Length: 122
Length: 111
Image 1 (cartoon, each protein chain N blue to C red):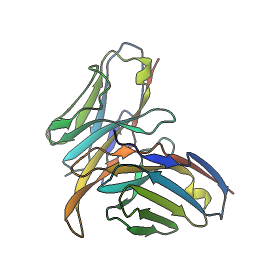
Image 2 (spheres, each protein chain N blue to C red):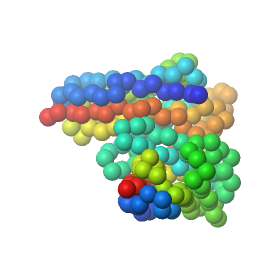
Image 3 (tube, rainbow over the protein chains, first blue to last red):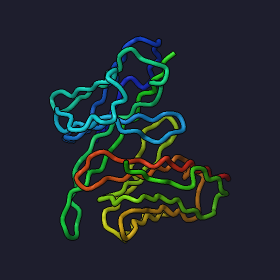
Image 4 (cartoon, chains in turn red, orange):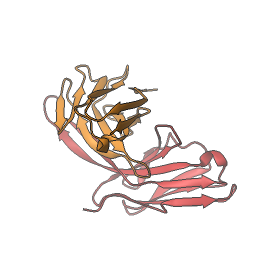
């Protein structure tokens, strides 16, 4: 089946401009995540959606960053007044819950990532 | 703040050698996932371990979850050039949804 898709794959923008990044999750995945990966760094959590609501947006670096999700599917990450330090690869993931065996029973979530959007702010 | 310490950060070995990558934390995770990422692509899920002491094998790759669910290791036997890439471990706490990632191990297998 189709995986997570993201667009655009590359975006070059001038400092101060706004950008919108799009994510299409795997069909049927209710949870959606945004991460940021800077050069030589690990992945940094930004925000998580369950359905259309965002229970955890603790990773958003500043109020210039916002995200929304509509129809429990597509999500958009918006960065306003971009700065050079915003340059990074922005990764989207969606997840499905799986029941772990053994006791006590619990559900764990496997996250599947899209190819990312490489953002360069000049 | 939960941290996952991954080591080594860089590893360059010859084809045919064995290697182990470690992922350690002082925190307990309900599950731990290993990903492999190639340049210009997103991380690809290799395996999820959920039970303390669990061992999972994926061809020449062996993944182990520590008994206390605080650490994990990835062992590659007879490495091949196609194993080259960035390997990431990521942990999920009970009841949480966001993954905590290690810094990654950049593995290079030389022919």
